[in-house]
Image (cartoon, rainbow, N blue to C red; front, side, top):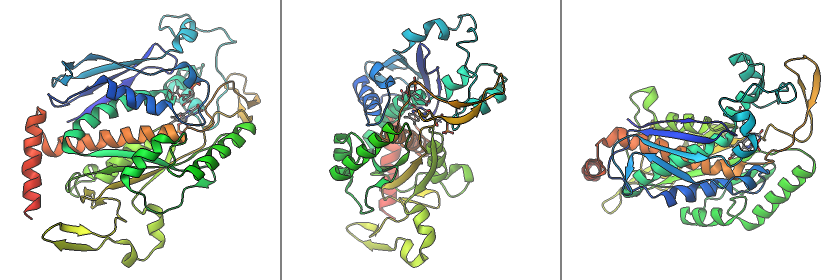
Length: 386
Ligand SMILES: Cc1cc2nc3c(=O)[nH]c(=O)nc-3n(C[C@H](O)[C@H](O)[C@H](O)COP(=O)(O)O)c2cc1C
Ligand SMILES: C=C(O[C@@H]1CC(C(=O)O)=C[C@@H](OP(=O)(O)O)[C@H]1O)C(=O)O
């Protein structure tokens, strides 16, 4: 079984991760992890914090000579902003004076619910741990997971399909094009004209002191038939992917394949008809299911779209109530992202990589990559003879 936990505050010294259950002998290159961390930091619409941070990973255990050893992998990413927060964020720092205590919850963030739940008179600890700064750790985890999927040929890419009211047209795009064009665009949109309109939308929103959400699509390709299972609710691959995506800060909806659109269409136009040829085996001419039927991967690319709500911290004041004085006030802020959909799409790739790595380890097992690959190849042969 693969599992991981993250720890660390947004303005604390560092984010740490432990990944347990990774087979031995998987190549792990820190440069590959850093590439993913840098991809997450790019993206039009982000605030001042991204100018301070330049994320890079430090491996603390579980990897020797560039390969996993089968031991837990420990890693960390330092927060450069820590230097500005040390007086408050040091674990042994004295409690803050009234001026530094955060008592004004932001609508849409974890602030109020978190302070009530944990009985905190200062909202700061909630804000620190609910912050999407934590997604840097998740992207590092995803980068490790990708290294397990790579020898099996499983790949993942993403692109942004909507920012606020500006959307990419629905036509299908080739995976090669998506991977190449999204990374070349500041908003990770593969159509240059739509990219421009998305950036203008973000600029206009910034001028109005408002924030924006949007939609991104993640595609997992070269997936074998048979990951996940129909036999138990908590083994369904679509359910596992949904949990991983919905756990990303500010993600409020996901769909697989046609998703919500399919609900408005008759079954005869939705379900992907099945064909057979000796050359291709079983195949489909459409992929409306988005690569999963009955909670099991069906060999088609897995297509997931996630909806991100607008960023809750706004320059435009919203009504709220001080938790100490109970007085109404209008929330206003010093620093925030305006739109983080491009960054979230990289976090989505990481969520997909992790979920797929878990499904691969669950099905093929093995304490080393060699053992896992033997099991994988045996299964692929068996499936091709069906
Ligand atoms: C990459 C990324 C960056 C984010 N940046 C901000 C930000 O600058 N300010 C903010 O208020 N929320 C930001 N968010 C969203 C909040 O973290 C999120 O809305 C909050 O944790 C509450 O969780 P919920 O929206 O899932 O309910 C960001 C989210 C992501 C994925
Ligand atoms: C630090 C990151 O994102 C942060 C997520 C975030 C939030 O509330 O979620 C608030 C902002 O932090 P700050 O208040 O320090 O500017 C973002 O910058 C990051 O993505 O690495």
